[in-house]
Structure formats: structure tokens, C-alpha cells
Length: 223
Ligand code: CA
Image (cartoon, rainbow, N blue to C red; front, side, top):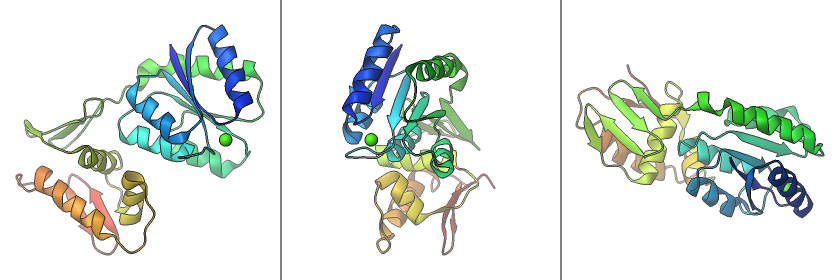
């Protein structure tokens, strides 16, 4: 079992690394959000222990990117703040559990074991809506038996729309989730990206799956 720790506090990292290694796990650690995300995308970890406040990229952004890219490994959030909002946000984004700092190692180990035991049931490797199916791990999309040739951004956009099918997603939300940017003015980027995606997944087919909600954004729905 291989675990990745993304945490920028020296002491916490060495304490976790030592304890988990002694408990028989293979442990990697990263102290930077951007680097941590790259590692998590690159290597198939069985579990990730993730701090919220990090240099580079914060824990929220790491988690939402992982889930968009179809990475379903359990994520245990470490949070310094005992705030309901933080916990709710983490769970909404797809975290499996959280631990409030400071915590005892025995507590962490118990949560880690529990999460690892739960993993086999959590395989959401594919998602199908109407005749469109996506396979997250292989970044593969097929509609009506035809393999769709998507760029990785297009795949991420399609994954987001499909995971949240039926929900109207604003341009701002899409921008934050896929491009990791905050913007007010240049929503054109999103419209262009949606148009390209439609060209591949909707235009060749009679039934349309991406719908425009005027003045709000877009929704993926089998109507
Ligand atoms: Ca931190």
C-alpha cells in the first residue's frame, strides 16, 4: 500500500512518514501543492493525506482536480481549523474523511486503515449518460460506439459536466475547476471550449447532451 502525504509542515511530515513507514506502508511526501498534484496524477497511490493550506496550490484545488481526472483514491484531509464549512467543502469536493490538527498518530492510523479497507467498493471507473461513456483512468470517451478524440482539457471539461449531470454549471465555476483561474470578464474562453467540445460530442449526433442555459451557463443532460 502506497501513501502520498501532501503537507508543508516539516514536523508533521516527518512524524507521519515515520509512523506510517513503521506501520508497513510505502510513503512519499511532497511539501508543495503543485508538485503534490503531479505526483498524485502520476502514481497510483492507494491513499492521499492532504493538507488544506499549501504553497503552490491548496488542498481544495488538488482534490477537485484529482476527482475531475478520474482519480478515485481515498483522500484524508488534514485541517487546522475546526470549521464546519471547511469540512463540508472538503466532503463535497470528494474527500473521504478529515482530521483536525493536532491529532494523535493512533487516530490517523485508524482512519487510514478504515479508508484503505473501503477502497475496493469505490471504483467509479466509467460513467455513462445516454449513449456517451467515459472511462476516467484511460481518458477515453465513446459515443454510439465511436471513440471521441478529445484533448486532455476537453476530457476534463466533459468529465466535469458528466459528473455533475443535470446541474447547471456557471462559466465561473467551470473556469475555476478546469482552468484554475478566477475571472469575471473573459467568459469567452469557456464558450469557445464548449463549442469545440460540442463539435466532437454533440454535432455528429442527433441527440444533444450539452445544453446552454441562457445567462447562466451549461448543463449536461439526457433530455
Ligand atoms: Ca499547511
